[in-house]
Image 1 (cartoon, rainbow, N blue to C red):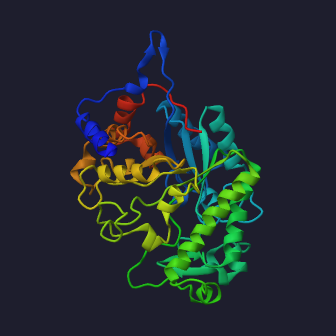
Image 2 (cartoon, rainbow, N blue to C red):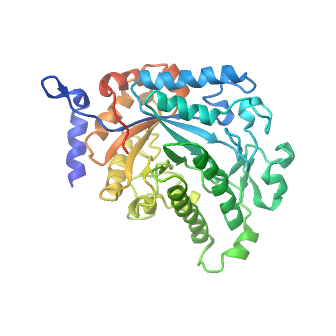
Length: 407
């Protein structure tokens, strides 16, 4: 296979990294570089930004600008900002309350427009701003009484399902799907975001001994399906197709991308799957048929979260790159790879992640696949701190000159 030969070439080059992207096409001229160089900027739990709730508007803005400036210094070109972390908003939404991660109190206005500012300041620096939404997560607890009094989940308690210590909107209700689309598309209508971005949360990750209680919705709407699993997948398929169509109507040219868990299905489950032994499979456990979305070009780009090292027994980064490259080939859907920068140098991680060169090896290997059009790093705080210099090594080895993001 063509991918096998490319992979062999890439692996052979691991010890002799080059900076081909910065090579001159002719004396005095440089070849134009186009690739995704992205970073996720997470707001849930104040993971990356703001550093804590309750900062002044000026302090929040200063921290945000620092993340954008750091992206520019590292020659990145895209920031994926989480703007709807828990059925709330980082803009003045008529649908949902202000996020608690800004002021510490859900529904309390922060005194400025974070998303509007982020779009303007990113564009002023030549960065793309992708608006990252979580469609169904309501809260990281199960008490509706802790939500803002105006929260839709309090006005419609039948929309919410407690599961695994968290509260979720029920994807099986058509009125829920319509509402979350309305809430997300409001941001697209208001701001010239470059893309709408979903991560890996569709139906929640399975929790041992617990059942996601959607019996009433299944009874009402599942009649045309052979199994509840098939019905659940159709619910998520509908969300993806409808969101894509509505983005095109609201703001033509805005892209739609999804960053799923890195394993669609193991080959032991489905011969079309990857040579992995992952405990979670998105098709079976999250009811997200990510392979179909790529193959049928429902989305503009996919960023599988390949958060494992090269040679990891259960989910080898190298094998998954080859699998995703094969899935994306000739589809029109761009393939970028999600990179676990947060693991580099982290306590408790395998020895591979203590080596600052591991991530650079990922980019070298991926360069052997024409289908791979770039990488996105999780996450902004780790880019800023870079405890073992893994990001610095990526920049030195691969980002010798700026690059335009794919369009």
